Length: 139
Image (tube, rainbow, N blue to C red; front, side):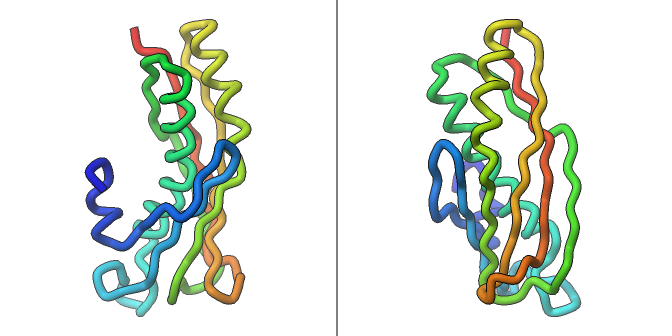
């Protein structure tokens, strides 16, 4: 809540997190809608990014090292209006440890892509987000 207050206010919540997967949810409400009576794309992006970034934060914390993280690029596709409760799931946690190990060993920044897929209550994909994360040991 303190790190991402706008996401919290818009209703984004972490539902499950492990080393390999993370699930976030957000419900379409007045505060996060667009003029087309669906969820604003940026709110979907916040929920999707959190489903990837929360795992990065956890694995950095577990490393015990001071490591910076940043989204370098992202891309998204929208396939259906986002109404009701949308659940974003990322299953790419396995990509993080290798990048952290490499930046610790070399001191060079590492990049990796993670994907989060948003589905509505009927299980229909409404949007897919890809984030290119960078990690680097702080000097």
